[in-house]
Amino acid sequence: MKKRLRAGFTFAETLITVALLSIVFLAISGGFVVFTRAYKSITRKANAQVMLSTAIMQVTDDFKNATVYYSSTNAFETSSRGYLVKYVQNSSKGMIVQPFNQSTGEADSTLKEIPLLTKKTNTDNMYTDFSWGDTPCTIATDGTALFDIKIYIRASDDSDKAIEYQEIKVRSNSVVTKY
Amino acid sequence: MKKTWMKKLKSQSGESISEVLIASLVVSLAFVMVLSLIMASQKIIQKTDTTMESYYNARNAFEAGISNSSTGVIQVTSTDAVGAYISQEYENISVQSKTIGTDEYVSFEKAGS
Image (cartoon, rainbow over all chains, first blue to last red):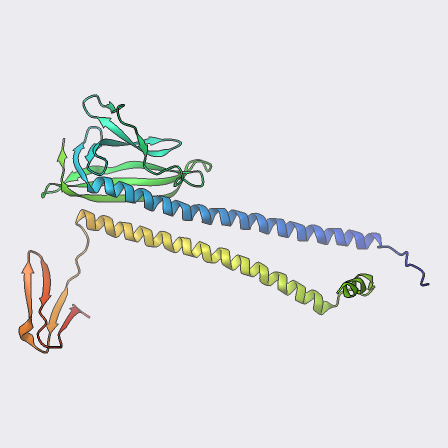
């Protein structure tokens, strides 16, 4: 029977192997971190684009069907909601469509406020934010109104950084009474 | 199969340089493929961003009534000229055509082209 070889690795061989393995491990882990970060960033951007488009669609629908606008409170009546509403900002839910009472200057407590986008649409720790344009509502010569609003998609886990932003101008379908 | 593996495990000879090179090549190819996938997705997202922005800017201009109207010469030709006529409404020109016979052509020629 052949005698079993008892020679092991030299210390130098072991050291070189460990050094090489460390380099390979570092390269793989570095690549994995970069890959994960890139994947997350790409997914977030894509989700933000979807959220922005959905928010714009909702806002467009509201403004297209607007009939009355109050410049003092930026509240407006729209037939797509059926009552006087005002856009307000909520840090966790994003843009909220709040039923409004112009005479009291406060939210109409008899009606329930609803978020502009549903909870399921607010994906990836992102939420909608808005600010009115320089002239929120301009009445044209034919009586229709041109609404100007800026919509942001922000990430709550990234210092509320704006991932997507778009200024939107929407002309109403019918005559709008401005107070 | 089991024998081949056992043979390989008991073998005292190392890997040849060509084997090592091919293995490195396969790993590099996989790495390049993953990288190109990330780059492609990033490009698509950026392109979508640009397209969305230009679309909404154009839509804003349209809604505000400040979009640029293109000027050009409208040329209407027909095998039977009786069937084609142009009517003008306000600042917009609308072209209407009637089908008399079998052939009718409506062509738009951009000014300066």
